[in-house]
Length: 340
Image (cartoon, helix red, strand yellow):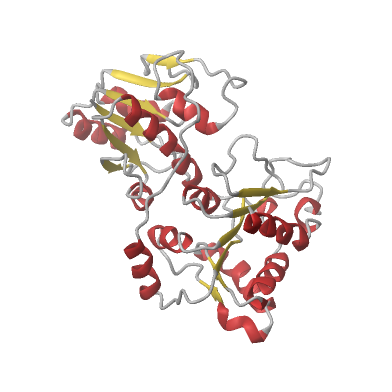
């Protein structure tokens, strides 16, 4: 059986999709899973042993691009897929499997796409409150109960992968590594203040550890502020890697971590899928829909009356849900993880 997955466009969502890949492999051990998704996702998908192949989605996010979609569909038609599972909920995302004439096309009902999906499911949000549950449910026959326990993402990284990336970036592993992930593509209302990250990093460095700051070039400003607030005595062990790594590099570096501190972000989901001890700071968002899927996790939030608001910037102008969340709360959560 050859299955095409129309994948999501965000790092965290693609990590959670691995739960569905695992469920598919359990139901159909000999199936081939191929994922159509943005080119960046290849770096992530190659760490998922369930995935047989990837196809680059050349249509931009939000772009209709009918001509491009038809061209992709022509290529897919020759590969004779038996089923397509469409994870995004948009009308556009269902066009390529329909153009390609894939016999069974599975997805949730939405955006008047019932004509394009012949295995169209009605989503009961109360039955499937988590995104990963909604993904896994599409891997099962209609109406079948979700497996217990639910499959969790589990990225595969080897010791040689870790050795290669640390050699490439001239990093030593002679002291316990704390990985800091201060970025969040969603917006400022997800970002714990750099000064708080710096305080946590300083405590770790005082105990002889080292801190690696991960993120894209967009996170360089936050990383510089964190490193700049670490006392000069320890600064050589607080290493800013933002903008210097590919997604593959970031995955391999994360796998080296003794602990990870993160905002609600794609890197948070990667840390969970690598089973790294993880503390997540929540401000404007909530773990109720897309929590980190791992055991060694502590979630820290203030639970203010105004949160979660799910806004990119604080509508009240103060971002108290993050600014008033003290470093001591994160440090306490780190100690709990260490003791567990």
